[in-house]
Image 1 (cartoon, rainbow, N blue to C red):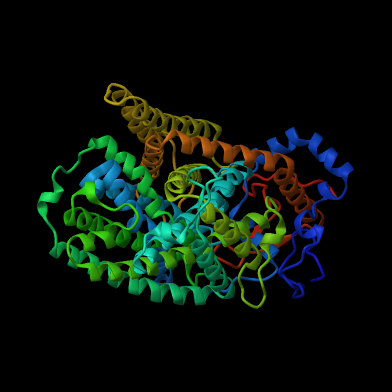
Image 2: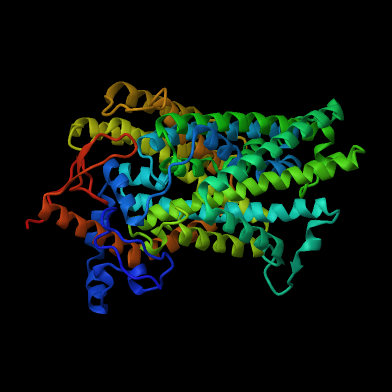
Length: 616
């Protein structure tokens, strides 16, 4: 067992090396509110006041950079744009294209599944632009959690954080289940031959998958040992994967029959968009690359090239693969478990199915590896703020990786993968992802048009009004799409409102901040379009997935009100008092952020309009 704890969140100076894996109470609940039952009861009585404080409290860029000290050790800056690009492709090109393409082509879109991929790809690309600006300006491991904490406040950031973690756990579980399907094909078996059927469990949760658990254990070991090592393994796997994809496209088009493309859209536009909402799962993963900004040599150059480049390549590859699959066989005969492998078997190239299965396994292994690296870094940064126990924030001094966070997240992923079917996982995953991407686009508009203490009340009120109209008109459009099967009148109202509100934001609210290093083009149109598309796609997801999403969000609220709120409140206020007493100023030397910055607003207090600390 290690000894020594961090005081007041710790700092990089004067820290002694310690073992990461300790299990003392102070490793999990070190805050004042949890020192005794009396303190905890008192904290619960202050819940309304503390909740209001956290809702209206915003962090600062400097605070997010400074909070890294709570991990005790630095993550190593070893990644270039080349690493990020391959991480991006490795994170994305996996189970989505190799499994969901067949499912959605057969059930929802037909050959028009290529349009579904194009729509999802456009939505993902718009989100990539928003993520890129934030990742360059705030190069920390927290990803979208850190971005939302700076612009929308602690409370919104926590709700998003819970869904980010859900996204990663479910996404990893879905890929692990798909890994078993293609492994079965490679062994000339059906997927269920490797699963254990338990009749006493509910349908959808009764096909136990021990192989999925095994692959997660292997991924966990690799992710714990080294980020750069993970990058090398991912690079090799991704190169092999891309070679196999080229083989599928070329060989598949040789066996193409144009007759299979008729009818092109048998389920109509509604089927295309329904498939697009589910296929958004195929693009999940690029946000994991933004969490690696803290380990990137030159974030201002490497992050934009790595993120945008990988997304453009990925979208192109997806569309070509979708075209190839539907040209090889009628959409009604596509196999939903291993569509590409079975397609080659149907056209008489049985040997090719093994090449495809091997390539798919390589691709899904890359996805699992990048997901493991990204999800651990999300949890690490969330724990740095004490919204989650700070035990998860510890970085091992030898490997430079967050071992605790990695093991716990992958253990949760393995448990979900062991029980749950792919179709249940994919729908729930898409909801969480679209919700988070919408919030990041909204946060970018807030960042560009509002600076606390500088933006006038008149312009602030205009910003709130226009953002409300943008989000409201997008929700109305999505709801009408979900309710009405053939109506169109409401679109004549909601779409013009979205256009006029975006134009109003452009004309009547002056920009409050320009990006220092790299910025999203066409603001506010591009982020506003990202909000609209993400919300619209949400309207195409089934009711049961929304019920599961609501249940998870309710669980997050309960945890936050009883634990996360009080822990993060104590941590922020303790540091605020210390800063006020010492008149502390620290120089921020990371991420090319401007040098001297006060941290009177550190960890949850908006440094742009921070309330004065209590008098010493």
